[in-house]
Amino acid sequence: MPTSTYRYLVLGQACFHLGLIEDAMVLLQTGRRLASAAFRRESVCWSDDSFSSSSSSSATAAAPCVPSGKTSSSGWAFIIPATESEAVSQLLAHVKLLLRRRAAAMAALDAGLPAEAVRHFSKILEARRGVLPHPFAAACLVGRAAAFQASGRPADAIADCNRALALDPAYIPALRARADLLQSVGALADCLRDLDHLKLLYDAALRDGKLPGPRWRPQGGVRYREISGAHRKLTARIQGLRGRVAAGEACNIDYYLLLGVRRGCTRSELERAHLLLSLKLKPDRAVVFGERLELVDEHRDLEAVRDQARMSALLLYRMLQKGYSFVMSAVLDEEAAERQRAKDAAAAAAAAAAALAAKQEAPKQEPPPPVPEKSENTESGRPRSPPPPGRAQTAKPKPKPKAKAATTTATMPKAAAAVTSTAPVYQGVFCRDMAVVGTLLSRGGGFDRALPVKCEAMSC
Image 1: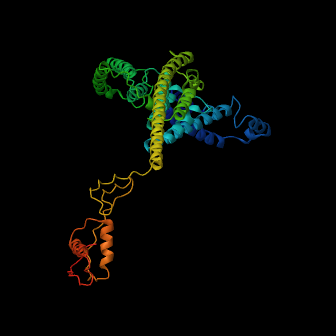
Image 2 (image 1 turned 180 degrees about the horizontal axis):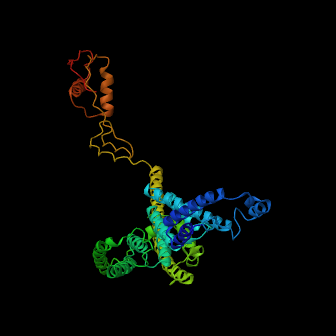
Image 3 (image 1 turned 45 degrees about the vertical axis):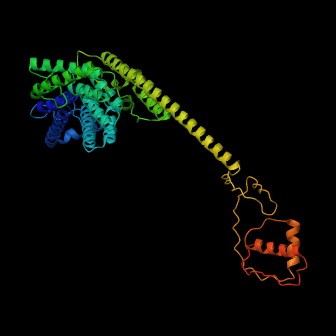
């Protein structure tokens, strides 16, 4: 194989292990293309003796490969060994798969589909096939954190930023993302600590004239020419946050947002959200993500990464426990208030029902009768007794006067007998006629004469 072909293949593998995935794909594809072209050129120059039965049987056992001493006329080996060729092919396929999944995840995030972006990033980070260089894994962790934040899961996003910073403590995008997340949930003290760390990195970059870390290591799209402007904005932001912390806003953490539950949630919703977060983000499980990662930094080993990941996960876990206690106390208070309101409503309903039943059983109350006018009884000569209570007293209408008929001599004795027997006190025209009759009777023997009777109206 020509030296240029080996150079491309070796450089492609090196770029992959350093986390330069795009460069690795280009170099590996170029190396394979050059190797295939060299193999086609040299295969034309082979003689028939090269394809003997013995050589063909050995070629079938160890892939299309010439013996170690076989060289072309130009003096270099014209094909790569089968095992190395297969390794390069597998590595190239793995690189292409990683790049396709990352492109799909970023496209879903830009399209407003955070759940789809989380799924693609999780396939990259949790797959068991192949290894991941830690710079590429840190970039994928920050991308999944952005997807978690867009889907309203800040605790998971903070956990991914913690893992990225465990892999590379000087990774600027991870520090920015975690500071923004902590400020969004109200943890201003922790946010201020991350911003101070970020300011130190900016100061070091301005002093050294380069970004922190090796020059070849990617910083998630951060460029050196952007550091000065970002440093000025960061200084103003730190001053504002320090003023808010001095005003007493350091402890105003929105635990509802941190746990991913709504305000006024039930106890079952809170317990379910807390259980899921506790199982995913407990400190013992925070170190599992580094099993298939490849560290290329000579100053850090896997144990240091695990220790830092466990420490940051412990801080987040304590914050979650504190938030669970706070929200649970609020839920219990709300349940107690709801029970008290239900009890008061039941008591009010019982009182209303009792009042309605008492009103239905009580006798109907009627207005008191009016006071009757005092009048003498014309028949008995004494005042009429008032009617019994409870009965409505109705005033009798006065009878209308009737026309008085002409009296005859035959009816006079009966009227005189009635007058002498009862001796009532009469008034009006009828009383004058009776007086005349009585005068005649007192004279005696005057029954054979006609009585002078005036025909006037009588009142009975």
